[in-house]
Amino acid sequence: MKLWQGRFETSLSADADAFNESLSFDKKLYKADITASVAHATMLGECGIIEKEEAEAIINGLNGVLADIESGALAVENAEDIHSFTESELVARIGQVGKKLHTARSRNDQVATDMRLYARESADRAIRLLKDLLQTLCDLSRKNLNTVMPGFTHLRKAQPINGAQYFNAYAEMFLRDLDRFCACRNRMNVMPLGSAALAGTSYPIDRERTKSLLGFAEISQNSLDAVSDRDFIAEYCFCASLVMAHLSRLCEDTILYTSDEYGFWVIPDEYSTGSSIMPQKKNPDLPELVRGKTGRVYGHLTAILTVLKGLPLAYNKDLQEDKEAFFDTENTLFSCLAIYTALLQKLKFDPERMLEAAGEGYSTATDIADYLAKKGIPFRDAHAITGKIVRYCIEQNKPFTALSAEEFRAVDERFEQDVLACVATRNSAEARDSVGGSSRSAAEKGLLALERRLKNY
Ligand code: ARG
Image (tube, rainbow, N blue to C red; front, side, top):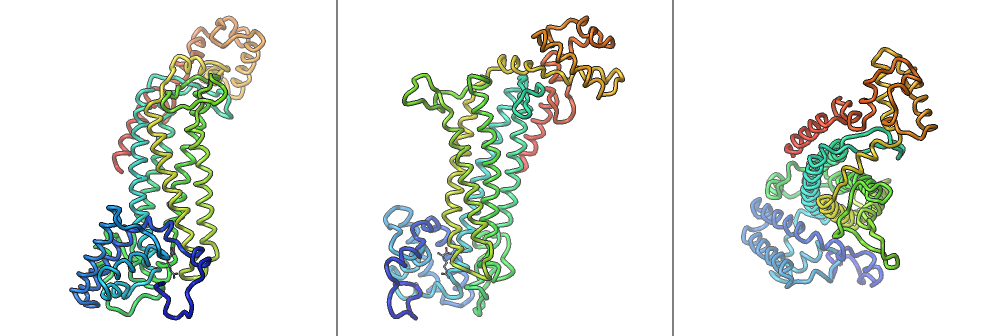
């Protein structure tokens, strides 16, 4: 029996019923749905819209339904959606009085309220997982304060950088993500309940009361908007998408840096996989999977934005499509954040290999140009002179560090003995002491600042 059966001569055909239903996926909302219903019934009783005893019977009945779902005694099945399920189960338990629960309410403000309650908890979990990841990145940064590694542009060695500076870079990204999730959580913390189907209600309800019972910060100010707004779902999916973008970049670095060709980091066996045919293989399946799952999270964001596009005011059934996209987004986000944090905690490093690699590819050429520029030679000319040194080294098949001061002077007589120190790999990283730069002390300051900012959340 449908909640809306009254005006229909026949019941919904089985195929239409199967197509229309949402219980198979919105049963996840059972707790939010019952919590919101308990608050609604409490308010109806306090405002005299239903009798106090009636409210009490409804609240006890609802709490019984919740307890039985949680214990596994009651299976959530055989209804159109979670709202129909809860109500029919309530009526089956307490009889006619259960039918008064839906006074001054519609499934439209009910589902909007449930989704906000659910998404608020989900955002809290995303925030906790992001904080764990950030703490892990800060730990890795501290561990790598003395590491010098190659910094890349265009995936070619560019300049030596500090290992802590590298991890700080990702921490900066995830700190922005954390801030975005907190802002998203605040914006969604607004209660639609009391908007009813779309136009509000003629009953003397007390929305402030349900708001405080449900812990919302505010109540919605327009009933048409409140029942049809799913911005908060789109925004959550966007926040998740950017987290995935950042994770995916870190995954790509992990895959490269742990390869034989790079050999900077090692993923321990517990987080590596093998090949069914090639016995020697140790594969980075986990980072690859996180990188791959980024695509599906982006897909859900695109899906929800497309559902919202062009919807006439106010509620439309299209909005039911927000759920599967949202639920899969949060699941994917949580599992990726958790597994990557665990993997990072176990990551091993080869600092000698990183230092060696950092010095390859004439990565200190900029230091030579800067050396000349600091003697008053215009930087453009210093760049050209250094280019000649690079060419000379390539011809001679030598790194800068194998050159003598005489060889430098043969290209330009303004070079002095001290040029030899400025091409040393570690000195190059140390020379960039600007705020946010690659010196150890700049990286340490960056780390301390990150930890300080992280404490604000
Ligand atoms: N399952 C529906 C949804 O997710 C609940 C709201 C139904 N409202 C309606 N007017 N049919 O949006």
